[in-house]
Length: 294
Ligand code: 6PG
Image (tube, rainbow, N blue to C red; front, top):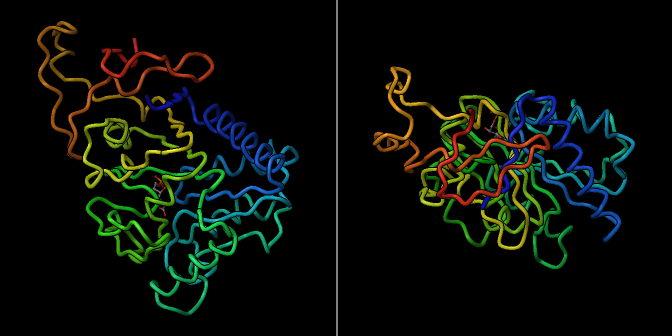
């Protein structure tokens, strides 16, 4: 069962997630003298990066952290559209992570495919044992189920050899680099950060084992030898209640089947249970009907 931690507000979510990120980094540095961290982009992680750069700034051994990215937009360095630009503004410009340990994607005047090959080479220099196993990968979730820059029905979803692929995506800007599923799925730890009602359907689909990963790439992130944790807020964890119930329909009475989710999975509420005070979910088995909110 997925480890899903639901928080009532973004402040609590980011504080607890940052606390866990700091613990993973410190543990990796204690064990191996360094930590490999792959950052995600988009808007959701901004607040987390701010908490890492402030509240946890002194608790993280930044000089031993190596920063990579899970994906990047292929636009000129310094563009506000770049994920590394946001991370530099919110985090890396405020902590003592050496520039030599910051490994951005797609920084040169080369084609996207060449940039992907260059990044794989950068990764191979770090993962000298030929096993790209990040200590921690941070991931976001798109409303239609993408993660990193792996979008539904992308040919890159079938990539089993290359560590990094250039992709064209149905989002702006379209040209991206993304780590591939074999890399993302062999991380020691992977954290999804998901907030907002707009992500509720994608979240349910991603947590449902019947989901076709082609239609919801986030569902393909299953760590063979690692810990996957979902950090979500209550609005993302919410589900769309059947409108009839608001007209007095009895809860539980021969409810209509859960509508086929546009992402391609039959989902129900039991995938995401309401967290307790600590943000931990109940350990109820997946098939137990558990209302999200009383
Ligand atoms: C990117 C991200 C992408 C992001 C999701 C969610 O390059 O945009 O890596 O995978 O995590 O699109 O984005 P938001 O956090 O902005 O909703």
